[in-house]
Length: 336
Image (cartoon, rainbow, N blue to C red; front, side):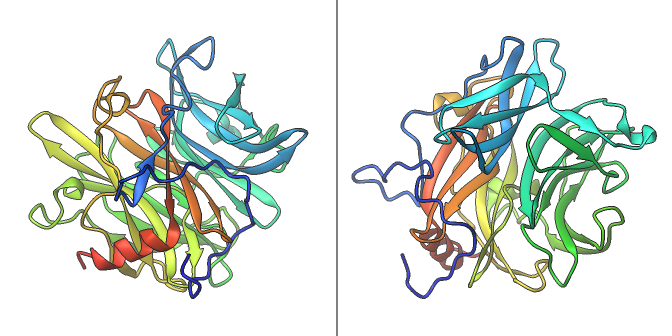
């Protein structure tokens, strides 16, 4: 790893990992045993994808997560899961338990595409929450058993609410993507902040889709992926982009560097993608041609990163890389 690069976060020497395949020049490479979570992980699941995990110690478990598990009614639900190694997951059959929400917003309609960020002593879950259309729901937990629901961050319509792992300028900070009530054919990333995780404001534009001629895989819409990783070079953000092809939407993902103190200022943004649908499990499923990142584990000592991503809106995959190589790739191939 580049000795001049500083990466923040807790040490994770036993995080999931597989070395780069012999002869590969990929900056981010797929786990050879993908998918790590199949669509039938629960007795009632139609699909398990677009989910988020974090280091969390509970008994023999080292990791916890919140998982999008669409059931065989095709209802969008969120379930808690635990893992020893970050590869094999035990996902609870029951939906995750929300408490404390105001009656106006506490009634469950649907929830999908969760993220989870540890900020100080709490784990905050954000998800696309049904409230007269999609918006950003928020809850916190300290045990991954009870989740205390807070106010929705925004009015509808909004998706891809991703918190930063620490306060910035003394405020909680979040990325999101304003949208519509359907399969949005547009989407920019915005930054917002809050003094108390209830009232959100000071909205700033971060990133628009790229011009088709510059980077076609992200020319229709973009959205934040996993919780950003803090480095001395800036916040490393994995984000998804969408191409409208002659055969429908194609979801790929790339990387960007954001300013540490003013994260709405983009320092670099990859023109080439890191991962785009290629394997059978990414190209075939309920929604073909989707690779959608929602979580990343990283070890500051080795610079390793493991990115969890949804595949074809059906199963969950894993990819590996080195943070310094990804940052170098992002800077060298920036379209800014």
